[in-house]
Structure formats: C-alpha cells, structure tokens
Image 1 (spheres, rainbow, N blue to C red):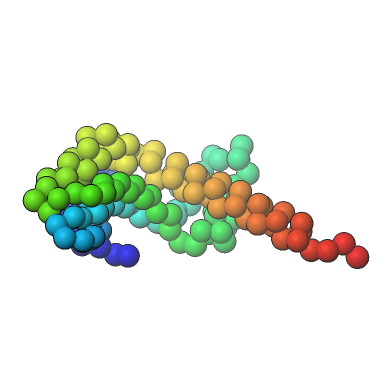
Image 2: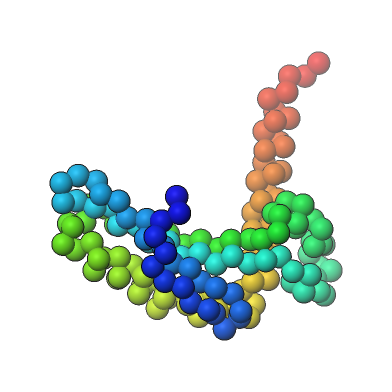
Length: 139
C-alpha cells in the first residue's frame, strides 16, 4: 500500500525521509488514521570498511537484501472521527519527527540499518532452514 506522500525531508546524512498517509475510511464518520515514515538506504561498500569483527561482507548483504535496506516506522489510531482525522495525523507525524528525526539523520544510521536488516534477514533465513529440515521426514 503506497499511500499519499505528505512530506519529504532531506536528512543531514544525505538520505531522504518520506512520510505517508495511509488513512482509510472505516464506516460513517469513523477513520483509521495511519502514518508511515520511510528511509531507503542504498547498500554501499563504506558500511563494511573495517568491519572484520562481524564477518559480514558487502556480497553477503547484497545476496540477502538486494541493493537497499529500508527503515519503516508506522503508527495507527483507530476509531477517529472525521473531524479529528487531520489533527491526529499531524500529531502522529510531529511525534515521529520529535522523537526520531535525530536518529534517522545520524551519520551512523545508514550503516547500522544495513547491518540490522542483514542480521534480521539472516536469522529468519536460518529459522526457515531449520523449519524445513524439521518437516523433512527421516529416511
């Protein structure tokens, strides 16, 4: 679900923060107000310079994640009156900016995101492999 782009900020670390409204009408004058913030990070070799302690290589990351990692933050509020919809959305956006803008703007953010996404994807891959082994009958 792509949603409506409601804001874009060029961050100090060179990345772009995009903010989306995914709100939808539920019934009568009731809405589900949904906010998403997204930052896409192109996977670059400099995120792995001097990273011999983790044993993660650029090739490993690209094989598992592709060419980019994406940070996503989402918040929803249910049963919002139509008259309050815009104010609630604005509040969700402002709260995100107040609490997270410095985090996603940090020069360390892109590399940390790529490493975290890789570790999560790698862990999930291992879990899936173990689950498939458990389902395979012994012969």
